[in-house]
Length: 190
Image 1 (cartoon, rainbow, N blue to C red):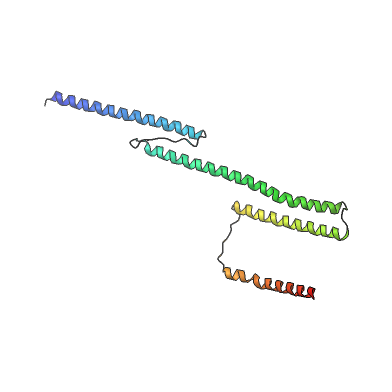
Image 2: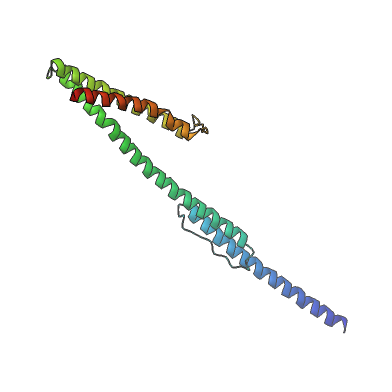
């Protein structure tokens, strides 16, 4: 083989290699522009956008990672919307749970203040108003504790306890109450 033939073959091989790398470079540039478009689309608020890649693409790992980020982002957005809806329902419920006893309390106190009730009935109204106020106070305290737990300002500590022991404590007190009721009922019958 002559030197000219060898140089011609080497030159052709080099040209083919350059053409191959230019083709690969163009393909990678095209893939990068698709990735850039997808990222812009995701950034502008389209969580459904995905980047397609072939198994032979050099950028397939980047595309898969972008798709994984987009899926996680979409999942977080869905969770956030669900949390916002649950929060709105909770606020509506809490508003109702506070408004109802407060309106009742106001009604009883208004009747007492305006002299619509007197004597024993007035005392009964005041007693009911105090009960409503206590109920409302306990509700607000429980709500406050729940909010502190939710905000992680307070930590709830779980403790192991013997369930049998816990259930046995109220039974004697309950039996005493039942026994007294039975005696009262028997005394009332006689």
